[in-house]
Image (cartoon, rainbow, N blue to C red; front, side, top):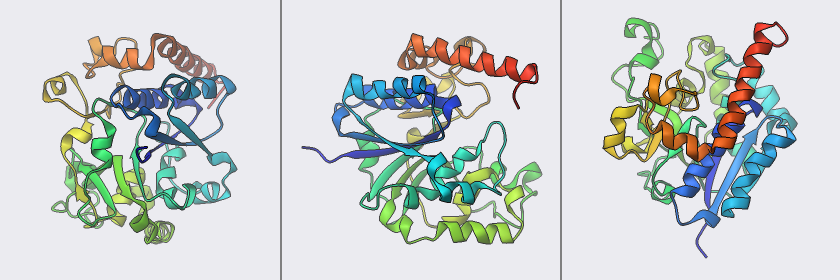
Length: 292
């Protein structure tokens, strides 16, 4: 029997369908479906959405391991003062707590954002060498603009433009080395310096903590800003970092999202329209002042 392949996702109930799509794209792209263990770091889910997610086990035999963040006092305490926004809810910080939230016997995991789609056997990534580093990632295509912001001067006292900077949407993690780093203490140091409000959420935090301690991986394993031109370059993981996402009704036509039609059928038509109705309902409730 092959060794398990451990993959981590973090999401809330408003992102259940993209999370399902990431998992299903992985299952579609590998023969080792029953070796897959998906660790789901999640905020409360409706029964209907949880049933949808469990479809991954029913269809492919992959294992789902549930990690409810609303039952974690550590998570609540850790994220209490961290900045968030509509686009970046506090659930994104769950990846900073992997050493605490995941089983102690895990030694390697892949973390993936939920606005991704996988097109190559995930075991190829899982088995990559890390050159002795605790973390493997892909350099961000917008570096150094993201780190230094406006005119690449805004955060001059925090980042050096000559330093490499990675995108945190895909992380290949050596958990044994990760656990040796007191990440919670590192975040406390950044907060004490008054930097948290100036940082680009957890991605900046990770780049500061792991500065000079990460292995650069090939770009195709996190194809950032995935649009139609990338379709001819054989990307392994598409990362839809733009505001327009492939689950938009006309994303392939109006916004040129890469493999938009394929994405829709990986999500399945049933879930695609269910997610569309969910987002429209939230939009109208907010418009009517019935939700924040």
